[in-house]
Length: 129
Image (cartoon, rainbow, N blue to C red; front, side):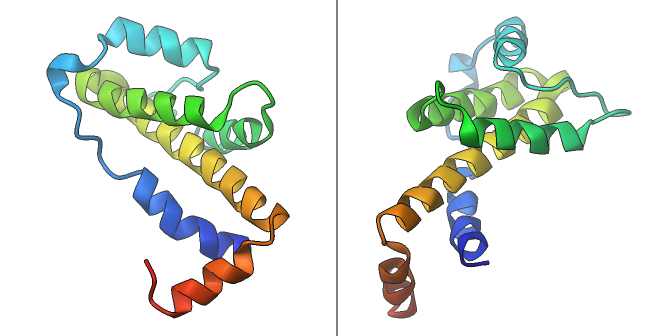
C-alpha cells in the first residue's frame, strides 16, 4: 500500500504531456517500427488490448536489459509519436503509461532497498515537495 501511495504522485509527474515540437517528432513509420521492436502491443479503437499493456509494464519492471534512462527516452518518443501518428495515438499513450509505471516501480523498489521510504513520507508530511 505504501508503494502505491509513493507511485501515484510520481506517475502523474512522468505522464505529463510532452513539450516537444511536432516538427521534431519521428514519422509514423518510425514510431510503429520502434513500438514493434520494443514489444508494444498492437492497438485499435475496436480492440485496445488494455490488459496487454499491463503485462508490458510488468515485463519492463523486471527487464534486466532495458535501463530506466532508456524507459524514459522511449517514453519521450511515445509522447512525440502520439502527436505525429494520430491513427496509433492510443497505442503510444498506453505504452507511455506502462513505461512510466515500470520506471516508478523501479524507483519505489530502490527507495525501499535503501531505506528511503520513511524519509520520503516524513518529508512529504512536512510539505517538502
